Image (cartoon, rainbow, N blue to C red; front, top):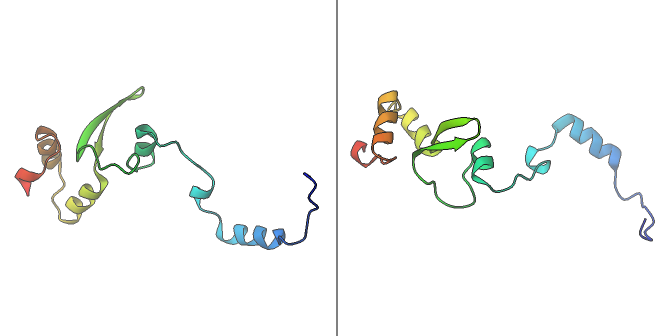
Length: 101
C-alpha cells in the first residue's frame, strides 16, 4: 500500500496476548470533545479552567441536575462534613464554603 512493502517488525501475536491479559486503557479508545456536557458526564472539568462553582445546576434535555466539585466533595466526606444541610448551605451561598470553613 502506498508503495511500502509490509515488514515483520511488528509482533502482532504478542500484542494480542498482552491485550487479552491486561486490556487497554479507555483513553486510548476514545477522544471526547471538550464540552461542558461531556466533561460532566465523564466526571471531569471542561478544558483546563477552574470549576465554575463548588456547586451549581446544569440544565440539559433530560432535566436539571446538581454538579458538585468532586475534590471539595471528597474532602468534606472524608471529614464527615457532607450532608443535605451542607449541600443546602452551599446552594444558598452560591457555592461558597467561606462561611462554613
